[in-house]
Image (cartoon, rainbow, N blue to C red):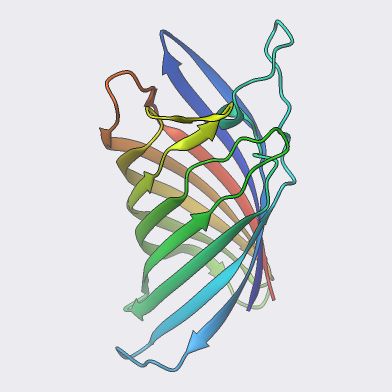
Length: 213
């Protein structure tokens, strides 16, 4: 299975004052291989991998025409590598998914490199509406996500305030039309482990479109 993900995100950051950055991010292209591991009835195990392509803007500026920190850009300007194991099980109309997403980052166009990251998500979903003849559906989703990241390399040095570990509650919907799936998600921080000088993240809204073949 080949998957292409083009994210659109809005991120609000609080550092004295609040500001937000939104836009189309870097596209991720992955392929998944279905493993022959029947752990449970009506379950599937997949192993995926691919690359993140620098399609998002990475030279956004503020009102003074100064380039924003790479971490506040829509894209990082780098080609990165991803690994995505995934477990899916279905029972009584509900779908349970558990997946991990590992990203190994390289340096971008200005030499900055984001820290390597790991996220793990558990999701329970159920159809709100589905029409098989037209291949359309609206799926409700609820779950939790854990994210952790190593230190960023910014402006020629490691940012010792940039590593973190956070837990989020996740809620949203998925719109399905033939091979296209559009996710509309809200990630609400429930616990953040950061340096006392680091920025706290508020609710994150994510929109992403996927095409699966």
